Image 1 (cartoon, one colour):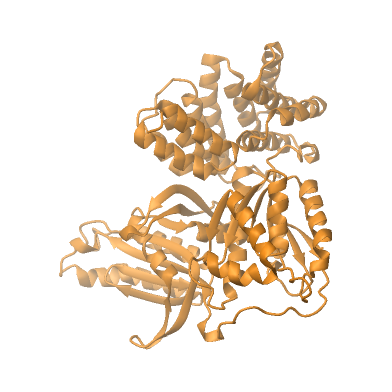
Image 2: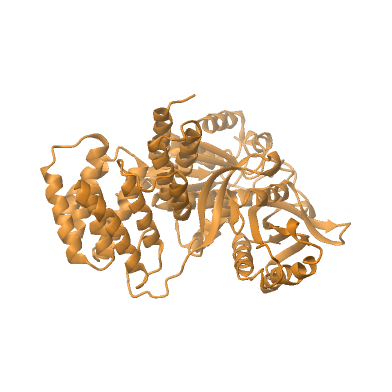
Length: 598
């Protein structure tokens, strides 16, 4: 059994890597053994807040009985949660009171302690709330305090220097801020959590002062890269990536990763370009996150070994050194190339999710021959993309068999729903339930009829299938909205009913169901989707990491997915990362011309 301090060290290590999900899960594991440890309680809430899951962090703050605690860092944690709520609010007059309420929380702590940390937050929030004079006054006090301190060391040195940068910005002294920036970056020691937190605040202050931001480009966590590329041909064979070009491509990959300051890489591990990316990332000490499209043996057999045994060896080395390994599906290849398309989209979404949580730049780099490619979705999003061109010497020789079109799996978004309280309904109430509750479901499904591929119900159960995750997300939130508006007592349903919905995106078969007489969906990922709804709280929509990644890739402006932790799925299906789906609030008043970084 680990001590509380050992658990805390593991949490801080995950934070330094920028893995806030892992930091939260580790803190909860530590709390299972040391439930009263204040530092672990504090860190669990902080990790959630840093991941953007503000509502869940607020609920956990109450659950862990941190309210009213005046010990070190806890009052500032409560203020931090107030600040996160304010920054997430739409632009306009309604945000001002929230910003000021958060400022008051920090100011209480600042008056008690005189510490620069709550003080700089007061200055930043008052600046964002439209009080630049008061903000500059407090920031000036902070500069005086910091310059009078003895030279700090370690973590304290970073926060002192980063706070100096922010204070100088709020005072409008860009020259002094620039001078402190390089020292702060050096003092960060590569800690992604420190950089992420400080960079957001400094960017918000810079934009609020309407100062240029180009000088801040280096002050951020390292760039997140999504990589992909062609399989290299075996020596003496033809292909889209000729073996003779290996050294040229490898040098170009290393050059680009260095120029971009890459610190994270997401992609597959096929022989050729992808292994070259993985090797280059590992060589520079970056985190490698491998995403494989199907089971390991099939992947090696079809996408690595045909290029030669040396590539198998290099694959095994990279896989062993990877920070994480995910499988888009753990089933067989079966000649189904659509799994590789699905896998690429998943890796893209994971890269975008990481960049959002870290406030880090994100870019796609690909080794490609110019043919129609899976990178189009990235290009259309407007995110940065770099192509390393290769010229095939002939059409590639395909390996393995291709699945017949009718037997190919397709990535589909699935919702399973269940009405809590249904089992308590009497026979007298059931006809009313069908008319009102299922009637509301019917109206929502009709509104989304052009997006729903399949709709099925059984008693209190609901199964819906969509082509895209954002269509499923829209429908799920509309279903929750519709049921929340029902007055169950007036409708003759004495106990309130609540809908819980689980969402997942995965490859499934679509084929004729001989029993039902119409198209239906089958596969392991249908079973996975069904295991989420039973663990979802009533009134909520829980989705898997693949679902959340798909939304981050294409519709992050409309939907947010807040991390709720590794969650044990129903019926012993294992643990999965779960996210709470919600709509992002839209700004109705856009008089402010600068964006707030949340």
